[in-house]
Amino acid sequence: MIRFDNVAKRYATGREGLAGASLHLAPGEMAFVTGHSGAGKSTLLKLIGLLERATRGQVWVNGRNLNKLRQRDVPYHRREVGMIFQDHRLLHGRTVFDNIALPLVVAGMGHQEIQRRVRAALDKVDLLGKERSHPVSLSGGEQQRVGIARALVSKPPVLLADEPTGNLDPELSREIMELFLQFNQVGVTMLIATHDVALVERLGKRIIQLREGRILHDTGAPA
Image (cartoon, rainbow, N blue to C red; front, side, top):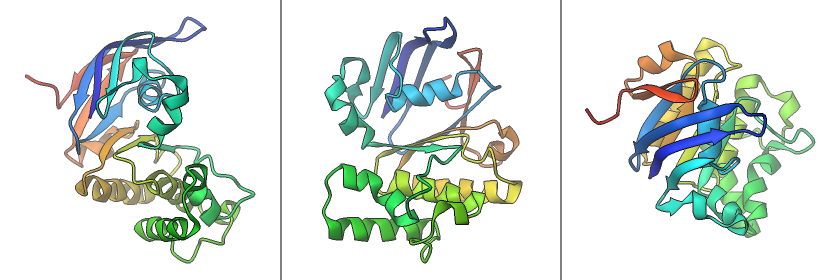
């Protein structure tokens, strides 16, 4: 599903985001990426979502070589990769419903199907009844759930999350992780970047530890 073969990413500033990273996530697998700030966690996710392109090496997602993907095909790739951010990135002038519906509107989906999918996504994150609210009226945990619903509404086979619990208290963090476990149980491939090592260790899932752009340890790597 996701494969990195000796992947490096060097930014225009000269900073190296990744340095020779190789890994493989099977379809339906769930893994966590940990490491200090600047270790390369966000870079790894951005390469999968094609927010950045690799400087060297090969990145494969769902059988597709991203190095060879034409720019005009990038939007189609991103529809298969849901992305969740720490800062939510919600449109505060739009309702919860409109925020979640946005990927479907961009994809040209019909009105009835949008209505059905948005309500199903709201149900999954326990926010039914909040569709006409605006993000500013929601708690931080509720805003994060809206971001999760928006990432899920297109039914992507891959879901990425960059520090999704970074601004939440421990109880809300556990609730968000429980949501992710539920999505993984129905076959969604998940890669989650987080600094909360203690939390993810209790979940018993694969942990990929980065340091200075390199994979320091991978509990799911072949022996």
